[in-house]
Image (cartoon, rainbow, N blue to C red):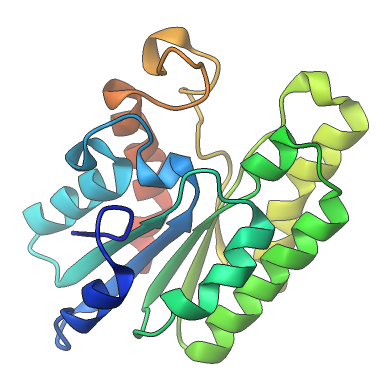
Length: 201
């Protein structure tokens, strides 16, 4: 398990083993495991599941707290310095929290996916669907929710319908801020991801 939030991504890439396949989780604080120890984040839990099954995959956690889709677009070239076999995209939630134009959000996500696809035409892409809070209004929430299925269809990608299914909005499964899964919640998020990821391995 490599975590780019705690060490230089450049040195991480330089030390990767060439005989393994790589799963890159590219996202924001939800991927980074905000407020938790590194070994409690769902990408680390995914790595533990993979190791228990003796599969030759290495998980790279490229989560960055506070990341927007625009920030991700600016960062993706750096992240793609090493071959990626499975790319899991988890971005957009911070765009919603800032009330950003969702047309720009979708355009940024498309730009990221275009770069990923151009870096490796055989890469398997998984999109982590998100939902906007109801207080953003019906039109905004519907528009946001539609982004992920639309992109999944366009890029022939797999879709996690809602990353925080059975976690979001449940106080006992989140940190005090009510936005980020706690250690217990991370296990549920792992299962939400694994249901889709396992078919790509």
